Length: 466
Image (cartoon, rainbow, N blue to C red; front, side):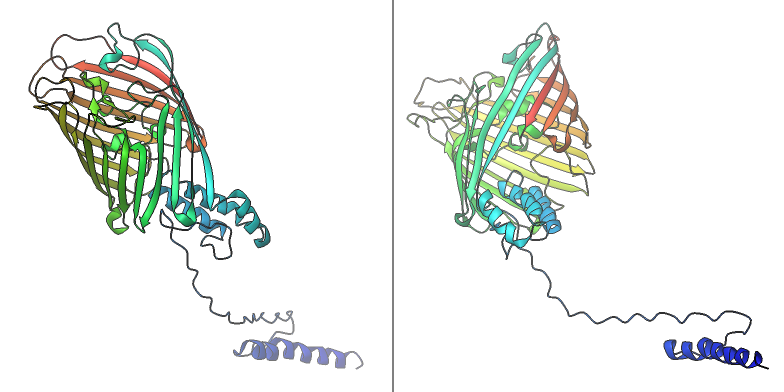
């Protein structure tokens, strides 16, 4: 009898634990545990306190109009992830802008305590920065034709090495005043430049929220393939037609603006009049009138472009990948030079999608001799030139390849051996972030009329860009 009563009491406790407690804890029907089975554990009830609603985080705008005060209490990208995302958007909308680099730096500063972010951002000068730039390119001609001539646009006349570019300089700005500047020199020098080793020298201000005024020696907004950075080309060299028909850098002023609506961009510029060589492949003389515009006149350039699917950036290659981006543009110029009047027209298409890029451009210009030139005439009659360029390529993290076709007609009134087609192909390998790159390029030039000329070229280019 002494053993039966504790047994009954234990059964009663098990019934209470298995049936009554679940009823209290869960609010559902009671479950009775069997005397032969262990009682089930009561379910765990998690009590959560309601969180107070947090106001949405407002991010500052990114672009040429923004005050990128990275590291401050009111900074729009205090969170490192926000900084990285905004820096990527900044690079796509304003390629090459040093303030985009400030956002990348802000991503690292954002991981530090608030007490350190402010002093470090002040020491690093994020409101007023000075950014060094280096671009060095060395080419090795591995194979040349017997008829190669640099005066005809060939890359080299004999196998050997050449220092293509040795460019360095600085850019910077003072963000509260929305002013920037750039000063670059090229130790190699451009034979078509009147400024010797000087490559660019300019400063810019933002007179209103969506506008920028650039003054000095800088690129003219004509020809999409000429405006792209030489360090980010799909092939090692620009197209032959681009070098011959684009005015590139000149002294003057350019007013430009951009809008989020359809990615609209526009440029209006006034410069000293353009001067070009008699030979088609000599191209334009850069920095025309840098010592004064004594005999020449003025030139005007206008460009408009739209990127409704997203901006394509400053590089030909699609190194970022992603969704389809498209830019369509057109530009024109008029130049009242010392001996000739010139007008040029251009239309372009630049597409990028998931590593693939397509770049197409059509250029045409016309030159007419003046009735009363201020200098001895360099043109005997009116000449119209035309060229078409199409390039297709693919880029990944470590390598890239591209092919290009050119149709060149230096004088549309004559059918002669100057009319030609140029086929180019390039294969490149690169380090991450494209700081170091090597590209192997082959050029085949086909004379549409006249005798065939042996002027194919195979060359290798090594590049460092910082």
